[in-house]
Length: 442
Image (cartoon, rainbow, N blue to C red; front, top):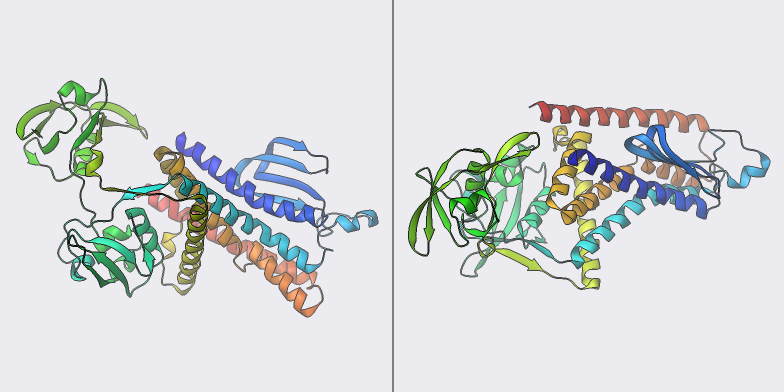
């Protein structure tokens, strides 16, 4: 239910902002707007404003539209000619089509600005032990190295490292990684990307062998009346083994606990240089329709190696604009690689992928959900600017051509181009949905 609700909220927000950009531009140029709809299909709610626009919430939340008074769709009386869209100068129509994607980019900047005002935190990108034979090991990276730049992008935490790598999706060459070792000495290595290019559906860190430094299984806080409290765990405990098997990290321990609800697990714990044996029976809780184990503890904060970054209002705005600019650049490069075949079409995601991302982000909290919204908003803006008939970018191109040749393009040509564009868009949607189903059933 959380996933579905998060998906609906995400789609409504980014589509509403996109269409509102079109709406504001139309009203600014004196165009009568007949319908402003979020969603398709049967109406759920509707109301009309003083300007005569019907605002609608429809039953299928997979998009939206703004319908102006247009002679191509309905009869226009001579008295209404000044309010008709197609008769407006080409430059006004170009601005109107561009206003939707522009609104999405503004929304993304606003969301990132709010996030930056609250500060940013993330694990320091220190490397753990690297498996022999991986791209990371072959490049000469070593355990304890901190990644401080990927290409020309500075990185201060792991999320920034992952985002920087996304710009190189599909690239078969190499990327310069700047790292700093424990002694503070910096060096640059060339990390080959072919392993990721050959397996593009894999997370880049996994494909390249960039293994983060593990978090020790150190207890920070024990929740009241939790399974861990009943077992006798205390803040500061370091778990070193479960059922006699040595434990390497917090993540490994969490995996064991989640996989064993209501199962007695024998723990070897170090407490103030004293070794103890404790028996933990993880509580059984429902998550995504299945039962998982839960201990009821938080990791020790000092073991997480978190880096806090703080911004003032102006610095936060600058960082927000830079983030959106980086995302736009990354998406344009990715679209180019999809067209040239460097990037696999299997990486395209549809409604199920978006819903999953929205649900995961919502579960992590409001800040993560806002970041996901910003990313989706930029995606919608960039995709709509593609020069494909049926999308805003296609109509922008036609408007610019009209401005150059100083006469309207033939109506028959425009309608034919729109039909071709519609088929292309539907084909891409079908491919994205097919990829979703393959991932889901796999």
